[in-house]
Image (cartoon, rainbow, N blue to C red; front, side, top):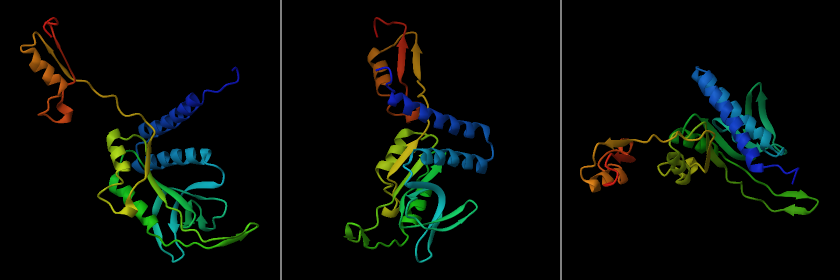
Length: 235
């Protein structure tokens, strides 16, 4: 069809745009505080552009009706339609605990305990609920919605570490500190191959074991992934 849009390509290009902005902030800004602020602004801008308008995303501190406050949270996703902002002064914002849907910590790479502690500071707040009345009649009291928590990283360093961090819910942390999702904008580094180039293979089976098992007696970073012997016929 002539008017068809390749949605997969469209979203891939949107991701590439975000990844480019994050890479620029990392390479061009040297001061750690300024770099962190630029990275946060890029992630926040992406969420603001793509979330339905009912939802808001802001850097904020979450507060409950007893006056207890969370840590400062890089990105809070909350109901923007029915939320009363306790305080908005310049760039500082207090958001009530009840309408919070998700909290995110923005990092250059995976950081386990810090993000978990931030999540726990929000989930530990007191949240209330009440029955409502509308044109349909009375609606029964609903329990507060679970708050999602996650990491938004420029890159994951080791992708497997990010998967373990999120999928296992930070096994060493309490339930309130567990993370439920994570995202990384940049692809992981290309793996570096290492190998042996030999005049002859000596014992062919030994060379095959060396390569295929990746030097089982060595650490992962010391393992070999390929080998070539001049005596190709024997190998």
